[in-house]
Length: 600
Image (cartoon, rainbow, N blue to C red; front, side, top):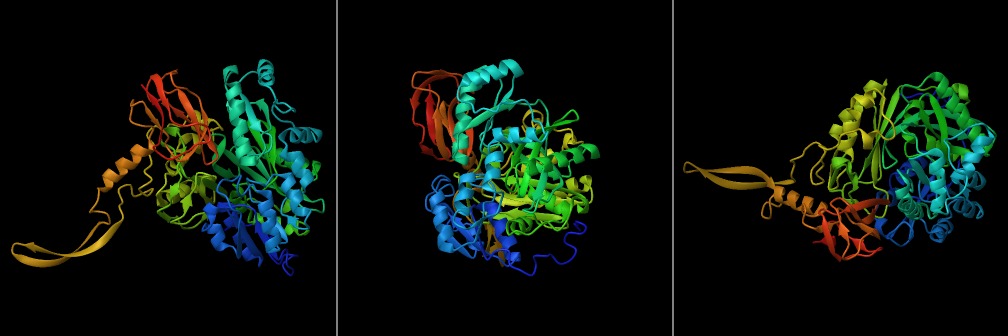
């Protein structure tokens, strides 16, 4: 069904030898599971690491060995260099795969691994330093003739720098984490009044997710498409690009749906982007898998950044090329040369990836929805793949990324892929947490998506999600389904006795399912309408309190900022009035429904 001519047709030069004996995956969730399965197919033993909250997580259950890191938050566990290095030494792993996020683009971590004689399955630390710092990356790209959107090559240290840039280039301006990606630590400044808050917020997110708070800025384009090129480069000077992906369907600068190849691009633009991506990779001495990202608007493309790691959306490239990119990563890291050239690459059909996140998209809010997955049934059928990091009974924690898994669909063309994806989403059932599936269905079914006229701002500025709702207590397709149990009872009808079986709610002796649903929704909301008792909609940590007792506030005004699942969420006043109580301070942990501010 999927093919890459001349690549996987026969034996591989490395098939008769072992690439590594044992690989430690310095990550969690879906990507850790993905790497573990690829290693198992190659006969490579795997080592998992886990926080206290992930003791029984799927990746720890699948790995051959698992070592505790301690702690709960990312900073206490998956960003604890010494704890991970200790696990490497204890396990005697001879290679480390960083996945994506966490330390995947951290040169210091890569160097700490290689200094111990252990292979880092990724680019050399020097390449990470160049491309991981988005400012030096811009300079490196310019040296090989690849240019980006207008931006700075200095870190932001003073709000006045942003004001000066705004005077020269205009607004909006994107403030971005210099060491990171995936939309984390990125804030858009609409005008000069928002500069200080955007700087603080971007630095907080960057620190929480990448353990670095450096930021820079660039012009924010009005309606671009996000196009990226997958590259592979070996240690023998060979580099190829494997087509492109369109990742324009986004919210909060983070991707929702990706597809390959990108629709409505000329062959000339595809080739030019691919050649530019390879030039950027070779120009910084890059090896292994990487992604060069561009913004495309009005027929022109601008270099955005290079992600020095495997991307979340790599499966769509796998489905249209027939290549296992994780296998390629391991083979390149072990010193094998690529066994194909650019001329061998063939794109077959069309692939779409839908990220299934634990978020409530109702009204376009996309609020994080941590909690327990009560039941999970994934779709199946021709051309359907699911890369998941959780199973029924697992817990989605507020402390980590909320990606449950990725639904990846192949079709012989784009129209078939869209229809098949919509069918698969209709078959998807998740109970216990709200998910982005209703929004995904709205996106894929919209004529703008079918025509590929959407941009990176389309979901938030054009797509109408006002009628989208999700009930975490119900599955995606069975909105009124309730867990039931069989009961055998006797009944009398017209004086005659009958033995019958009935299927009734398991908790029929308590409150009704409807009452349970109403109760949970009330807790998840922002307090009663106009009550003045401002509540948080989900579990998280208070990042910032913006009001004090005695302050006057208007309806809809942000009163505090809640961090949940590495995202900042504004909590707004539900009525106008005077703040009479402030019940939290920055750093406090809160649960869904907790009252944080009282307004009279």
